[in-house]
Each structure stands twice: as C-alpha cells, then as structure tokens.
Length: 419
Image 1 (tube, helix red, strand yellow):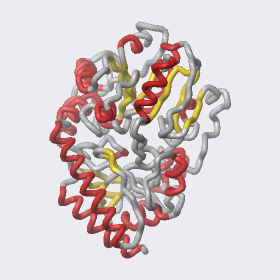
Image 2 (image 1 turned 45 degrees about the vertical axis):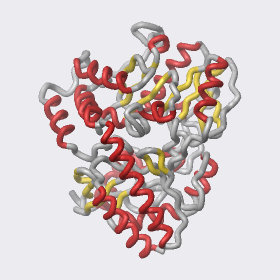
Image 3 (image 1 turned 135 degrees about the vertical axis):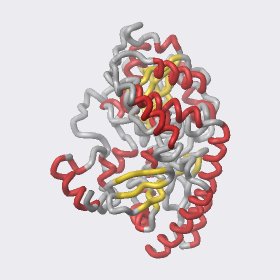
C-alpha cells in the first residue's frame, strides 16, 4: 500500500487537501494522517501495519466495534441480491418499524444517505409545515454542511479555524439565528424551528444544563415553532431511545444517522404524522434521493439495532465510565489538568480544570495547545483519538475492560514521555 506519507502525497495530487472530509487532514493537530488498511473490533491498522486502539469508530457508527461478524454477514447477504434498486424494499419498512418502535413520540421516518441530508431535510420540512422562515441553532452545534446550518458550527468547521464558510451566501443564513448553547432563547412567531444537539457532541462534549431542553420545549410550544433534536450522534447511543428518552423531552422532529446504518452511509429524519405528512408525495415539501433506503445500509442498521439491547447500553456506559476515570487519573498523575465529561456512553476530553458549558468556553480549552500534544503522544503509543479537539470519544461494545486497561496503561506511558 505504501507508507502513510506516500499515500498522503498521492492523495494531495488528486483530492483537495488529500482527504474527503477536512478534519482527516490533521490540520488542527499537525502531522501526516494515518491511512487505514483494515479494522476489527476496537482496533484499526494503518498502511504501515501499526495497530491502534480506536476511539474514533468512524465518529460514532461503530457502536458494535469494527467489522462485527453479524453486520458483515448481513451486508454480504444483502449485496448478493443487488446493491441498489431505485425501488422500495422490505428492508426499508423493517428498519423504519424498528426505529419508530424505539422512540416514544416518533410516528414516521424517512431514510436519506447522510446526517447532513437529514438535518437539511428536517429544516425544509419545518419551514414547509409552519409556513415560517426563521430557524434557531446554537453556537458550537454542528448539523452537517447544509448552508443554513453552517453558521457558528462546531466540529469540522471549528477544527478548521473557521467561523463560517466561503460560498455560503448572506441570503442562505439570513433566516438563521445563532444562540449560545445552554441558554433558552427568546423566539417569536417568525421562527419555524429550533434545532439543537440535545447533548452537544461537536464541541467536545457539553451536557445540557438543567432546564435547558425543557425550556426549549416550552418556548417552541408558546409560539408554535417546531423543536428539532439532532440525534445523529446521540440517537441509539445514549439509550435505546436516544437523548429524548434519557432526558424525557419529546421534540417534534428527530434527525438520525451513524448508528442506524451500522457503518454504511445513512441518515434519517422523522416526527409526528401531522408534520411528516407535509412531505411529498403526501404534501408539498419535496425531498428525495436515489440511494435513500439503500438495502446494504438497511441490512447493517437492522442488525446493529437488534444487538443494542439494554445489556449493551449498560456495558457501554460501564466502559465509558472506566475509561473516563482511568484517563482522568492518568493525566492528573502526570501533573496535567484534564476533564473527561461523560453523558451516558459518550465522552469528551478537555485540558483544563472545569468542563465547558458552551462553545466559547469549549474554544478556550480547545485552543490552549494541549490537545495536539496529547493526541500525538497517544497515537505514537497506539491509541487513536479524533484529530481535532472538538470531537467526542466513542467507546464501542468491542472495547472490553481489558482493552480499556491497555488504553490507560498506554496513555500513562505516552503522557509521561511527552511532558
């Protein structure tokens, strides 16, 4: 395959920046990206044969771990019948039934091919259903790269040091209001929707403050706006019913992705029938896609959800807790202040004394220079985190206690060698 550097140099000649998603270029941490040759369970191997304990897990889809045998079998079986038809399939119906069954208040769902498609479609639907133009999002929440939602986005946008995006016109964001996370905004009857990550996982990991989600539900009800939960990351990861179940708040629309595709390209949005019936062919809001409901993605998603029972979430939470406690102690023993906020099965990592409550505080911690140092120290010792300080850690069911213990041991050696 060639070395990582050789592959990156080849990629730079034919792919802008050498990558197909900006954060992969290591721009915010420096150095040359590793190129993955294969993955299995909690591990990935790069083009030079080095093995890493992987806490990226494709930024969330790998909740079972890489190349889970049941998922591989399901995808292989589905592929043998054809990879795409442009026609309805039973597998779409089955996965839709499974998603609706798991989420209280969710009555109908439509599949798309990415989280970005899910959020942009949900916003269009909210505008069509309400007849209003305005939307509210929160600084540091990343909802994909749709024009109207790129304002003050976290994750990929923030990792590039950008506050917005060239090519996004003033008109495209004219109806977008950006509010600080964890502050309930004042809204009026011009607002179609308030979209939020119920647990912000694109500025590290920031939990909702007490009363924040309840406040959003109340202000939306007061003016007739729709509350949209972007659960592309949190959906089917924090609990069987996602963040909506965990916090007991029912939005009007949900956006999903990642876990429901089992590692294949997928997204979905859904809500109550009285909102969803505005979609074509029932209503006047158009949305479509050639690969929507792709049979391979449906097979992988169905298998993944079947394996995510209550015991799976208990295991994931135990692993996340053990990892958070172990790394916190490891960093403290090395004289390095670090906090690893945890919400259920998700972790953040900040180098500082206190976890942030909004994007401004997260940015201060992300920009203090410690994350790139720790990232490379851990990578050099076989532990892969995301190459950006605004990302979360994604332990999987394949991360056993033994793997977590190995992670903590490697982290102790890595940090001691780098300070």
